Length: 244
Image 1 (tube, rainbow, N blue to C red):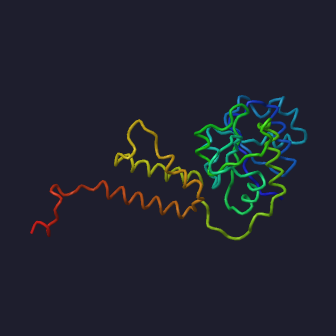
Image 2: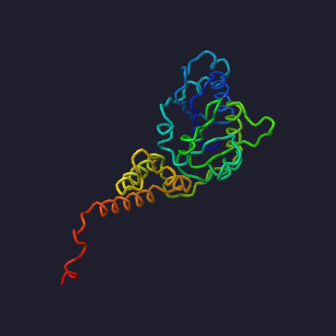
Image 3: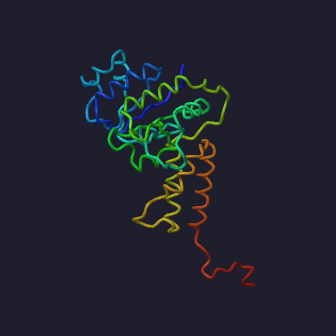
């Protein structure tokens, strides 16, 4: 059986695409997916028409209001993008599938809507990116086609490792660390009111695959530093030994 991955579809626009995507997921042994704010319900007749034999997968779709909610329990969140020149270079579907096989914890694969793809804020929540190599004369793929390609790559990928590995941190854990860091940096006026937060500083943490223990250590260190910064200092800057 292929490694299960959560397919997350952000603002899907076309019910027919979801019916076809449900069929592709079932073709290749995937069944977990989440839709973020679709404009219609999973029982839409247009979706059911294309979900031939996969009506159960279509009906099982979980609904979420935000990407943060959809991936909160995931340790590795990978966004799909058709853009060129991205850094670091996106993984192709086969490399993505091989990486999935060696990683513990829940994994999410995120797709943007059919017109605009994933936006900057959504991409910033991803730990890595993946792209389907396609001809430059016709670079974009239909959403259901893209889902099918990744489901197939996962079905052909290597068996997931059974070696015991450190428990990976989830996106919710990283979000908590981001909040602690931003509170500290606002207190010391590194981050000023009305300006962007600490997203660029946290991005390397997302890419590095921190374990839950490592996140807890970082959080403890930042909290300790914050307490030290908040302590009042002697008014003249001299200790008792210096005074004598």
